[in-house]
Amino acid sequence: MKTQFLKIPETYKITAPYNQDTYLVSGELKKWEGDTVAVYSTISSTPEYKPTFLGTVPNLGETEALEALESACKAYNKGQGIWPTMKVRDRIACMEKFVEQMKPKRDEVVKFLMWEIGKSLGDSQKEFDRTVEYIYDTIEDYKQLDRDSAKFHKNNGVNAHIRRGPLGVVLCLGPYNYPLNETFALLIPALIMGNTTIFKPAKIGILLISPLLEAFQNSFPEGVVNVVYGRGRTLATPIMQSGRIDVLALIGNSKSANALQNQHPKSNRLRLVLGLEAKNPGIVLPDADLDLTINECLSGTLSFNGQRCTALKVLYVHEDVVDEFNKRFSSRVDQMQFGNPWDENVQLTPLPEPDKPAYIQELIDDAQAKGSKVINAKGGETTENYIFPAVLYPVTKDMRVFQEEQFGPLIPIVSFNDINEPLDDMADSNYGQQVSLFGKDIKTLSPLIDTLVNLVCRVNLNSSCQRGPDVYPFTGRKDSAVSTLSVHDALRSFSIRTFVASKDNDYNNAILRGLMDKKASNFISTDYIL
Image (tube, rainbow, N blue to C red; front, side, top):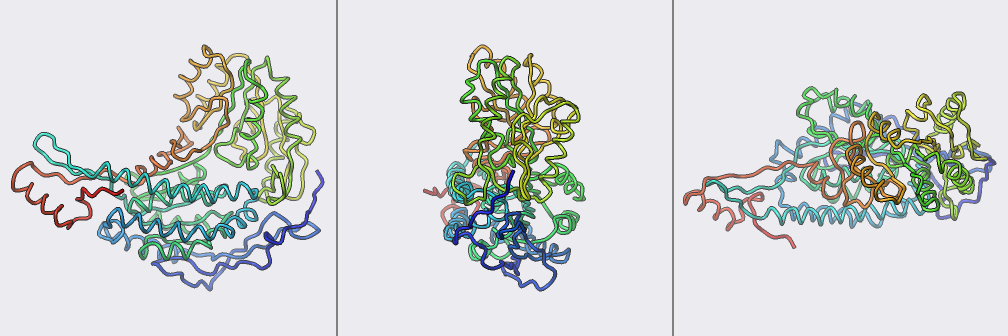
């Protein structure tokens, strides 16, 4: 595959490095004058290939990590802080202020998304807009949650006012593939429920947070949002070892999650909100509409180069249609257009991890050594920052590509005769997020659906796996997730039911009426937020 370095539009050129020299702690953008980490893009901006220098970020250490922890703990103040005790409508007002200050930063964030992680212009714009929509949806759902709680319950002579309250201090670690949207899917519900936070951006996709730091500073009380930069292990380890973290919110891999969880001295007290690996299969039945199926499998396997936990990472195709499927699917893959994120009609873009092409090649070599073939003509062709998607067939269980979450442009295909073959594989898998099921016979689909819902958490009928719409549950079984992330469920993941109870007698009832009439308590309230 020949590399073509096309002219970069003026709007998207890197004219000067962006040196992020502050971090946010205790409501202050503190100047950093210590070591920094250089940020490079795998996209070249010169005629001869060369990674583009984008800028620098602080390389903070343990001292700064514990400073951020102290700031978050002080803001929570053992449940007495301004933020956890604030009225719901006031927390909502802070979040609305933040999103309004966020929206003018769209072009800056989109530009960084393209350069840092290689996401296409359209998908980068979509990620920003989707995140804004997510925040508004979260606000609306929180209003409804509060409206539903604006009442007293009476049972067995006891009055109860039940609401959801914060959990405490949250350590938030986001992923590189959706460094804005997925990170905010953790951060936003954690914040709006009254928790205080320490947020470390992903190693890749880090500069795009910089334009939003002032919005965080301006919108939330001191210490509620703390943003730190540096190596995850260096920063997160002492924070977890302190035992002062109440919630670990992470989207990444299970090894990192396990390692961090084990650092906490009282792990039984630690709430986990995790989005982890997946090996989502596509199952193509003999009666599947191949035109529809191939379109969905293309987007399912190769949207953002397959760098999605929701990507289809293995395709099971019935032996009656596998030859036709392989022929048509591999041809369509070869027609996909590779280019830079801002190029028109681009479908495949540079990989943000410099070592990812070599890793994908290792998986290809392993599969070929064990009897598989690359069945598309362009599969495995490489440039300095990309490896063209390879369609591998036949794939067997002893191959690395079958066992590992490849997280890149590589599509393994497994033929099957008996539907129990893919079902058994799914049952034995370490993962259980989603599946795509392609077919139309109701008698065949019905028992499959009834089984698959017990193996994964979302069954996609004749469509690719995906997260959206964000109001639907997003979770997984086994090593794929802990807790549920979505607009509705995330608010519950980052909170706990708590209530005030009193015996139903004249003495207590007079007190309750007084609390409500004088609006003396931010918790005891029957105000209805429109």
